Amino acid sequence: MKDSDRGPVLVVTNLDDPTTDLVIEELHGRGVPVVRFDSGDFPTILSVTATLTCDGLGGTLTTPTRTADLSRIRSLYYRRPSTFAFPHLDEQSARFAIAQARYGLGGIVASLPGCLYVNHPHRIGDAEFKPSGLAAAAACGFRIPATLVTSDPDAARAFIKRHGPALYKPLSAPLYRIDGVSCTVEVQEVSADEIDDAVAGTAHLFQRRIDKRGDVRVTVIGDQVFCVRIDSNLLDWRTDYARLRYRVVQPPPGISEALRAYLDHFQLVFGAFDFAVDNEGQWSFLECNPSGQWAWLEPETGLPMVAAMADLLERKNTA
Image (cartoon, rainbow, N blue to C red; front, top):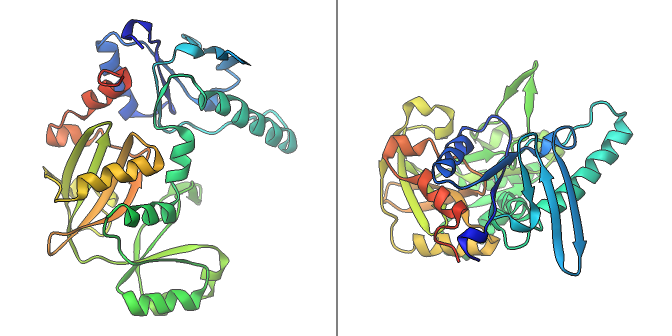
Protein backbone atom coordinates (compact mmCIF):
# COMPACT_ATOMS: atom_id res chain seq x y z
CA MET A 1 0.00 0.00 0.00
CA LYS A 2 1.33 3.44 -0.93
CA ASP A 3 1.66 5.93 1.92
CA SER A 4 -0.76 8.26 0.17
CA ASP A 5 -3.40 5.51 0.32
CA ARG A 6 -3.06 5.00 4.06
CA GLY A 7 -5.52 6.52 6.48
CA PRO A 8 -5.08 7.52 10.11
CA VAL A 9 -3.38 5.86 13.02
CA LEU A 10 -5.94 4.71 15.59
CA VAL A 11 -4.83 5.10 19.21
CA VAL A 12 -6.85 3.24 21.82
CA THR A 13 -6.13 4.29 25.40
CA ASN A 14 -7.49 6.11 28.43
CA LEU A 15 -7.43 9.88 28.83
CA ASP A 16 -4.45 9.95 31.22
CA ASP A 17 -1.64 8.38 29.19
CA PRO A 18 1.48 10.59 28.88
CA THR A 19 3.29 7.99 26.75
CA THR A 20 0.56 8.17 24.13
CA ASP A 21 0.60 11.97 24.27
CA LEU A 22 4.26 11.97 23.24
CA VAL A 23 3.71 9.56 20.37
CA ILE A 24 0.71 11.51 19.05
CA GLU A 25 2.67 14.77 19.22
CA GLU A 26 5.43 13.15 17.16
CA LEU A 27 2.94 11.83 14.59
CA HIS A 28 1.23 15.21 14.33
CA GLY A 29 4.62 16.80 13.68
CA ARG A 30 5.06 14.43 10.77
CA GLY A 31 1.64 15.22 9.32
CA VAL A 32 0.29 11.73 10.08
CA PRO A 33 -3.44 11.80 10.92
CA VAL A 34 -4.40 10.31 14.29
CA VAL A 35 -7.77 9.30 15.74
CA ARG A 36 -7.62 8.73 19.48
CA PHE A 37 -10.38 7.16 21.51
CA ASP A 38 -11.05 5.27 24.70
CA SER A 39 -13.27 2.23 24.38
CA GLY A 40 -14.79 3.22 27.72
CA ASP A 41 -16.34 6.22 25.92
CA PHE A 42 -18.62 3.88 23.97
CA PRO A 43 -21.44 4.56 23.33
CA THR A 44 -21.75 7.99 25.01
CA ILE A 45 -19.30 9.97 22.84
CA LEU A 46 -17.93 7.21 20.63
CA SER A 47 -19.95 5.51 17.91
CA VAL A 48 -19.23 2.84 15.33
CA THR A 49 -21.01 1.60 12.23
CA ALA A 50 -19.45 -1.39 10.50
CA THR A 51 -20.60 -3.49 7.57
CA LEU A 52 -19.23 -6.95 6.90
CA THR A 53 -19.76 -8.48 3.46
CA CYS A 54 -17.92 -10.82 1.13
CA ASP A 55 -15.94 -7.75 0.07
CA GLY A 56 -14.63 -7.25 3.60
CA LEU A 57 -15.16 -4.88 6.51
CA GLY A 58 -16.11 -1.24 6.03
CA GLY A 59 -17.72 1.57 7.94
CA THR A 60 -16.81 4.39 10.28
CA LEU A 61 -15.73 5.06 13.82
CA THR A 62 -16.65 8.51 15.11
CA THR A 63 -15.34 10.49 18.07
CA PRO A 64 -16.42 14.04 19.05
CA THR A 65 -13.72 15.48 16.75
CA ARG A 66 -12.77 12.79 14.21
CA THR A 67 -14.26 10.20 11.89
CA ALA A 68 -12.18 7.25 10.71
CA ASP A 69 -12.83 5.09 7.67
CA LEU A 70 -12.45 1.55 9.03
CA SER A 71 -11.25 0.23 5.67
CA ARG A 72 -8.28 2.63 5.57
CA ILE A 73 -6.69 2.41 9.03
CA ARG A 74 -2.92 2.62 8.75
CA SER A 75 -2.11 1.13 12.17
CA LEU A 76 -3.60 0.75 15.61
CA TYR A 77 -1.75 1.52 18.84
CA TYR A 78 -3.54 -0.40 21.57
CA ARG A 79 -2.44 0.87 24.97
CA ARG A 80 -4.56 0.91 28.10
CA PRO A 81 -8.21 1.70 27.43
CA SER A 82 -10.68 1.89 30.27
CA THR A 83 -13.47 -0.65 30.64
CA PHE A 84 -17.00 -0.34 29.32
CA ALA A 85 -19.49 1.05 31.82
CA PHE A 86 -23.25 1.51 31.79
CA PRO A 87 -23.98 3.09 35.20
CA HIS A 88 -27.51 4.13 34.22
CA LEU A 89 -28.59 0.50 33.80
CA ASP A 90 -29.48 -2.08 36.41
CA GLU A 91 -26.84 -4.73 37.13
CA GLN A 92 -28.19 -7.41 34.82
CA SER A 93 -28.83 -5.03 31.91
CA ALA A 94 -25.39 -3.45 32.37
CA ARG A 95 -23.75 -6.87 32.28
CA PHE A 96 -25.55 -7.62 29.00
CA ALA A 97 -24.65 -4.23 27.49
CA ILE A 98 -20.99 -4.60 28.47
CA ALA A 99 -20.81 -7.98 26.78
CA GLN A 100 -22.38 -6.61 23.58
CA ALA A 101 -19.96 -3.66 23.56
CA ARG A 102 -16.95 -5.89 24.15
CA TYR A 103 -17.76 -8.35 21.40
CA GLY A 104 -19.19 -5.73 19.05
CA LEU A 105 -16.77 -2.80 19.19
CA GLY A 106 -13.96 -5.10 20.31
CA GLY A 107 -14.53 -7.46 17.42
CA ILE A 108 -14.48 -4.62 14.91
CA VAL A 109 -11.30 -3.08 16.31
CA ALA A 110 -9.63 -6.49 16.17
CA SER A 111 -10.54 -7.06 12.49
CA LEU A 112 -9.36 -3.97 10.61
CA PRO A 113 -8.16 -4.89 7.11
CA GLY A 114 -4.51 -4.21 6.30
CA CYS A 115 -3.91 -2.68 9.73
CA LEU A 116 -0.63 -2.99 11.63
CA TYR A 117 -1.44 -3.70 15.28
CA VAL A 118 0.88 -2.48 18.05
CA ASN A 119 -0.15 -4.83 19.55
CA HIS A 120 -3.24 -6.76 18.52
CA PRO A 121 -5.58 -6.83 21.56
CA HIS A 122 -6.06 -10.59 21.33
CA ARG A 123 -2.31 -11.17 21.25
CA ILE A 124 -1.90 -8.84 24.23
CA GLY A 125 -4.37 -10.99 26.11
CA ASP A 126 -2.44 -14.15 25.28
CA ALA A 127 0.89 -12.65 26.35
CA GLU A 128 -0.37 -11.31 29.69
CA PHE A 129 -0.55 -14.78 31.25
CA LYS A 130 2.68 -15.03 33.27
CA PRO A 131 2.93 -18.84 33.16
CA SER A 132 2.56 -18.72 29.37
CA GLY A 133 5.24 -16.05 29.16
CA LEU A 134 7.70 -18.02 31.29
CA ALA A 135 7.09 -21.22 29.31
CA ALA A 136 7.60 -19.36 26.03
CA ALA A 137 10.71 -17.64 27.37
CA ALA A 138 12.33 -20.95 28.27
CA ALA A 139 11.42 -22.41 24.88
CA CYS A 140 12.95 -19.36 23.14
CA GLY A 141 16.27 -19.77 24.92
CA PHE A 142 16.05 -17.37 27.88
CA ARG A 143 17.22 -18.35 31.36
CA ILE A 144 14.25 -18.26 33.75
CA PRO A 145 14.21 -18.60 37.55
CA ALA A 146 12.54 -21.71 38.99
CA THR A 147 8.85 -20.85 39.36
CA LEU A 148 5.84 -22.49 41.02
CA VAL A 149 2.18 -21.68 40.41
CA THR A 150 0.00 -23.39 42.99
CA SER A 151 -2.94 -23.27 45.37
CA ASP A 152 -1.40 -25.99 47.57
CA PRO A 153 0.26 -24.65 50.74
CA ASP A 154 2.38 -27.79 51.14
CA ALA A 155 3.68 -27.49 47.59
CA ALA A 156 4.53 -23.83 48.22
CA ARG A 157 6.47 -24.68 51.40
CA ALA A 158 8.36 -27.49 49.67
CA PHE A 159 9.27 -25.24 46.73
CA ILE A 160 10.59 -22.49 48.98
CA LYS A 161 12.65 -24.92 51.05
CA ARG A 162 14.17 -26.35 47.85
CA HIS A 163 14.67 -23.15 45.85
CA GLY A 164 14.73 -20.42 48.49
CA PRO A 165 15.19 -17.60 49.00
CA ALA A 166 11.94 -17.11 47.12
CA LEU A 167 9.60 -14.33 46.06
CA TYR A 168 5.84 -14.05 45.90
CA LYS A 169 4.57 -12.26 42.79
CA PRO A 170 0.96 -11.49 41.82
CA LEU A 171 -0.11 -13.28 38.65
CA SER A 172 -2.05 -10.17 37.63
CA ALA A 173 -2.51 -6.69 39.02
CA PRO A 174 -6.19 -5.71 39.06
CA LEU A 175 -7.39 -2.61 40.89
CA TYR A 176 -6.99 -3.19 44.64
CA ARG A 177 -8.30 -0.73 47.22
CA ILE A 178 -7.75 -0.48 50.96
CA ASP A 179 -9.97 2.05 52.74
CA GLY A 180 -10.78 3.54 49.35
CA VAL A 181 -7.12 4.05 48.39
CA SER A 182 -5.65 2.32 45.31
CA CYS A 183 -2.80 0.01 46.27
CA THR A 184 -0.26 -2.16 44.49
CA VAL A 185 0.34 -5.77 45.47
CA GLU A 186 4.14 -5.73 45.61
CA VAL A 187 6.70 -8.40 44.91
CA GLN A 188 7.82 -9.69 48.33
CA GLU A 189 10.31 -12.18 49.69
CA VAL A 190 8.57 -15.04 51.45
CA SER A 191 9.77 -17.86 53.71
CA ALA A 192 8.30 -21.33 54.12
CA ASP A 193 7.03 -20.61 57.63
CA GLU A 194 5.01 -17.65 56.33
CA ILE A 195 2.90 -19.89 54.11
CA ASP A 196 -0.49 -20.67 55.64
CA ASP A 197 -3.75 -22.22 54.48
CA ALA A 198 -4.82 -18.96 52.82
CA VAL A 199 -2.72 -20.05 49.85
CA ALA A 200 -5.45 -22.61 49.10
CA GLY A 201 -7.87 -19.77 48.33
CA THR A 202 -6.56 -19.06 44.79
CA ALA A 203 -3.55 -19.44 42.50
CA HIS A 204 -0.22 -17.98 43.65
CA LEU A 205 3.14 -17.56 41.94
CA PHE A 206 6.38 -18.24 43.82
CA GLN A 207 9.78 -17.78 42.21
CA ARG A 208 13.39 -18.32 43.18
CA ARG A 209 14.92 -14.98 44.07
CA ILE A 210 17.91 -14.14 41.89
CA ASP A 211 20.90 -12.70 43.72
CA LYS A 212 21.02 -9.80 41.33
CA ARG A 213 23.33 -6.85 40.92
CA GLY A 214 21.00 -4.95 38.60
CA ASP A 215 18.02 -5.05 36.29
CA VAL A 216 17.62 -4.48 32.57
CA ARG A 217 14.55 -3.17 30.77
CA VAL A 218 14.60 -4.12 27.10
CA THR A 219 12.06 -2.33 24.95
CA VAL A 220 11.49 -3.77 21.49
CA ILE A 221 9.70 -1.44 19.06
CA GLY A 222 9.36 -3.11 15.69
CA ASP A 223 12.90 -3.93 14.54
CA GLN A 224 14.56 -1.64 17.08
CA VAL A 225 15.85 -2.89 20.43
CA PHE A 226 16.63 -0.55 23.34
CA CYS A 227 18.44 -2.01 26.38
CA VAL A 228 18.68 0.03 29.57
CA ARG A 229 20.45 -1.13 32.73
CA ILE A 230 18.64 -0.06 35.92
CA ASP A 231 20.59 0.05 39.18
CA SER A 232 18.80 0.63 42.46
CA ASN A 233 19.48 -2.05 45.12
CA LEU A 234 15.69 -2.50 45.27
CA LEU A 235 13.94 -5.85 45.19
CA ASP A 236 11.45 -4.33 42.74
CA TRP A 237 12.70 -1.16 41.04
CA ARG A 238 9.14 -0.02 40.28
CA THR A 239 8.58 0.83 43.93
CA ASP A 240 10.84 3.92 43.99
CA TYR A 241 11.73 5.60 40.69
CA ALA A 242 13.67 8.33 42.50
CA ARG A 243 16.37 5.81 43.44
CA LEU A 244 16.96 4.49 39.93
CA ARG A 245 20.12 5.01 37.88
CA TYR A 246 20.18 4.28 34.16
CA ARG A 247 22.70 3.45 31.47
CA VAL A 248 22.42 2.08 27.96
CA VAL A 249 23.87 -1.40 27.54
CA GLN A 250 24.25 -4.00 24.80
CA PRO A 251 22.59 -7.41 25.15
CA PRO A 252 24.81 -10.45 25.66
CA PRO A 253 25.01 -13.14 22.95
CA GLY A 254 21.76 -14.94 22.25
CA ILE A 255 19.44 -12.38 23.83
CA SER A 256 18.52 -10.56 20.61
CA GLU A 257 17.57 -13.82 18.89
CA ALA A 258 15.52 -14.93 21.88
CA LEU A 259 13.71 -11.58 22.00
CA ARG A 260 12.64 -11.96 18.39
CA ALA A 261 11.60 -15.59 18.89
CA TYR A 262 9.49 -14.60 21.92
CA LEU A 263 7.71 -11.80 20.09
CA ASP A 264 7.12 -14.04 17.07
CA HIS A 265 5.65 -16.70 19.38
CA PHE A 266 3.00 -14.29 20.63
CA GLN A 267 2.73 -12.38 17.31
CA LEU A 268 3.77 -9.10 18.93
CA VAL A 269 5.65 -6.16 17.42
CA PHE A 270 6.24 -4.41 20.75
CA GLY A 271 7.34 -5.74 24.11
CA ALA A 272 8.77 -4.37 27.36
CA PHE A 273 11.03 -7.11 28.74
CA ASP A 274 12.42 -7.23 32.27
CA PHE A 275 15.59 -9.12 33.17
CA ALA A 276 17.53 -9.61 36.39
CA VAL A 277 21.33 -9.55 36.06
CA ASP A 278 23.14 -11.81 38.51
CA ASN A 279 26.65 -11.50 39.94
CA GLU A 280 28.09 -13.41 36.97
CA GLY A 281 26.47 -10.98 34.55
CA GLN A 282 23.91 -13.49 33.28
CA TRP A 283 20.47 -12.21 32.31
CA SER A 284 17.39 -14.04 33.61
CA PHE A 285 13.99 -13.37 32.05
CA LEU A 286 11.35 -12.14 34.49
CA GLU A 287 8.49 -11.06 32.26
CA CYS A 288 7.44 -9.27 29.09
CA ASN A 289 4.66 -6.69 29.24
CA PRO A 290 2.97 -6.35 25.83
CA SER A 291 1.57 -2.95 26.91
CA GLY A 292 4.42 -1.81 29.14
CA GLN A 293 5.58 1.72 29.87
CA TRP A 294 8.72 2.94 28.14
CA ALA A 295 8.66 6.68 27.36
CA TRP A 296 10.17 7.73 30.73
CA LEU A 297 13.43 6.10 29.65
CA GLU A 298 14.01 8.47 26.72
CA PRO A 299 14.88 11.62 28.71
CA GLU A 300 16.97 9.48 31.08
CA THR A 301 19.06 7.93 28.30
CA GLY A 302 18.63 9.94 25.10
CA LEU A 303 17.40 6.86 23.24
CA PRO A 304 15.06 7.84 20.33
CA MET A 305 12.20 5.66 21.49
CA VAL A 306 9.30 8.01 20.69
CA ALA A 307 10.58 8.40 17.14
CA ALA A 308 10.91 4.62 16.85
CA MET A 309 7.29 4.12 17.88
CA ALA A 310 6.13 6.86 15.50
CA ASP A 311 8.12 5.20 12.68
CA LEU A 312 6.38 1.90 13.40
CA LEU A 313 2.88 3.40 13.55
CA GLU A 314 3.51 5.56 10.51
CA ARG A 315 4.65 2.35 8.83
CA LYS A 316 7.68 4.24 7.67
CA ASN A 317 9.70 1.07 7.38
CA THR A 318 6.84 -1.39 6.99
CA ALA A 319 5.71 -2.79 3.65
